[in-house]
Amino acid sequence: MARVRSEVPQATIVDIDKESVWHHLVQHQQFDKTDPMVIVEGQGMRIRDAAGNEYLDATSGGVWTVNVGYGRKSIAKAVHDQLLTMCYYAGSGGSVPGALFAEALLTKMPGLSRVYYSNSGSEANEKGYKFVRQIAHNKYDGKKHKIVYRDRDYHGTTITALSSGGQNERKAQYGPFTPGFVEMPHCCEYRCQYDDATNYGERAARELENVLLREGPDTVGAVVLEPITAGGGVITPPEGYWETIQEICRKYDILIHIDEVVCGMGRTGKWFGYQHYDIKPDIVTLAKGVASGYAAISCTVTTEDVFNEFRKDPGDSLSYFRDISTFGGCAAGPAAALENLHIIEEENLVQNAAEMGGYLKDKLHGLQDKHDCIGDVRGKGLFAGLELVRDRATKEPMDESVLMKIASECQARGVLVGRTNRSLTGYNNSILLSPALIARRGDIDEIIEALDNALLSVVPAG
Ligand SMILES: Cc1ncc(COP(=O)(O)O)c(C=O)c1O
Image (cartoon, rainbow, N blue to C red; front, side, top):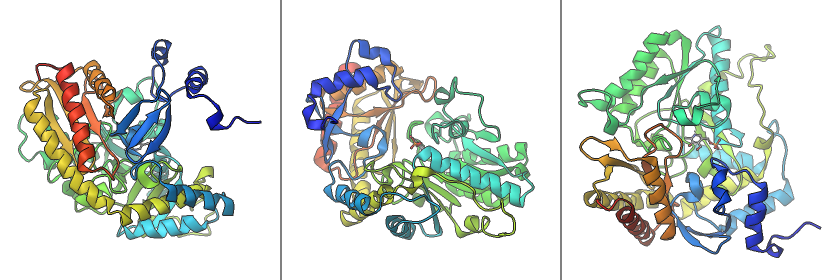
């Protein structure tokens, strides 16, 4: 008989894990001397590992995911009930939670009208790329097939998602990549590429026009961008940036694909990151916070115009969207997502993210006044990044090894923080904070205190 979880001693679990599991994004030789952290329990903002350590999780599950916090009985019940009623049918058919969640989600996204389900952020983005490629074939003789992405953005881990990624360390050694993806420069004002930063937002956005003119606008179908770059260092776009991007896209007939995998579902203090800016996307992708990690689900959401491109010609047997994602048909995903959305609404978590985000930002600026190594504080809502430097005047980036020590000092003080990890050579120098949207002032004070003390212990000169 299979072993029941409670029958296995927790120390043994760590040994079994060490012997059998290949962890994500981890160099395993460290486990010759240390143990992997195996998380056994979570409640609210807090988790406990198999060694009995308790942590305040300021990362929402390591990667901006558990937006409504751990231990939500109502989501577990919704999934339980759905699995007993109807666990799965392929996405060529429908399901009750699939229909209800799509309807509820679209009320938060005026201008968008169709939801395509799959089960990871990478996959959701690839669906968007396939829309663009197929529209190019059906409407533009295959010509308008290129997709522009931005330096420092990340859109996922599959080879094609990586091909659209602007993080050199995530891409290194995994080429050759899928052709047809073209990079544009980043928009991090703190790392301004020009001698003069005047009008930086518009100038950085004009780089898109430069790329289009270089490639030929008739060869480019879309631009894919994070509304606020996440793993590339929490880069809040400068004023005027998004408006100029939209103006250029309209001028050259380029679809706007916004990757909301991190920012979506309230993280930034609005339902979606793009809603901070006056823009109308054509394609929006969602994953992590959609069901807060209680079940796997991702969504590629589009306008009716994009959708209609695939239903125009029933006489052409190849012109509709011939794509399937087996697990996009799992009913647990939308069941969890629907309850997740109800929780966000009922508990006013978008508003809480905005308010607590303001409080967090003030506190981080307070830390910046105290610690010279904090060069820049960025982000919106409960989504923040601190770029650390060796010298404020020269902005020389802090070495990644120092950030590793700061994160482990925070952990020793009972708080888990994130950091840029194997993203950009020389610029893995940001501490990342993304507590669950249920965070209260006391939680934020605890995070700040741990960070303050960790900085004091690792970078004593401040
Ligand atoms: C902005 C962004 N897009 C896409 C992805 C890929 O999502 P997944 O890991 O679910 O494939 C990530 C993952 O971190 C992400 O940060």
